[in-house]
Length: 164
Image (tube, rainbow, N blue to C red; front, side, top):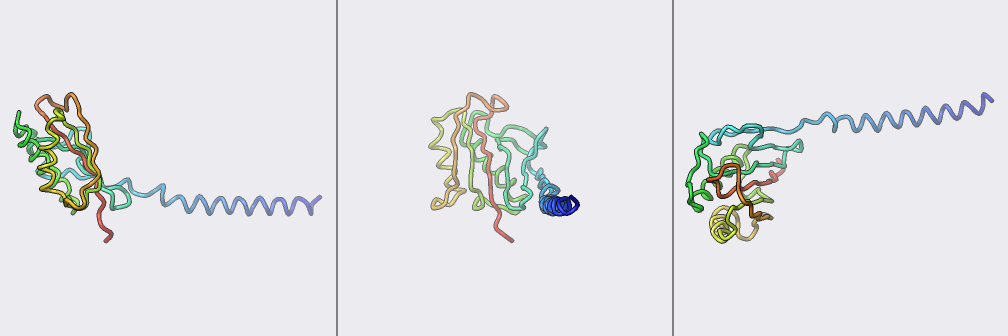
């Protein structure tokens, strides 16, 4: 019997060592930082969210939906869709710049509009910020309302920073 148990225990030991190596290889990923959270100056102080999060990979950037707030939370352009859209893009620029990104790094946007008839105006203004030959993917979502009744548009973005 001893000759049979020795090989079995040796096989078990090898499996346990293999499992230990596998767990050790996975451990750094489990301890990877959660990312970098940035609330840039010039944007309203957020409550319960972060304006910009750089993922743990150091390259993927998530920008929270930006609305037509100034730095103290006042709505810019009440009732004026063009003015609000310009303010939203100014806020997106600030958010991106806070992590050394630009509109050229944006790969995806989601645009929320309270009036879908304003889509052409949004496209006109967007064209000033994005390369017309390489615009980001975009989803346009008509909504009945945003966080405050006087807000007309909100845009969130995902960017990918170049390798450094």
